[in-house]
Image (cartoon, rainbow, N blue to C red; front, side, top):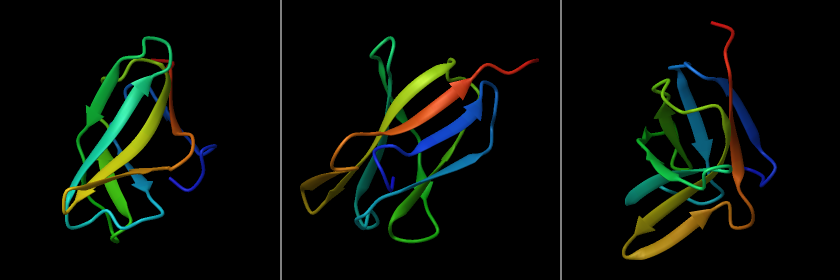
Length: 100
């Protein structure tokens, strides 16, 4: 998540992998990728796997997120210390309705 203004756009039933990056190392601990629907305010923890480097995680879309905008933050706990990225604002995951 390189910027609080970073927007990733996907379609409603997409099932591809999205990659989320941080400005700090997230490997070697517990990582949670949190998505808050900006309309309902419901927070969902998205499943992640290790990224291609120590600064990223991958999330496999399941096609179940409802259309709308989600504020995204990456929470890493290493040695009992919790760090959240981005440190200011949120990345945005926008789920658009598909035509099918």
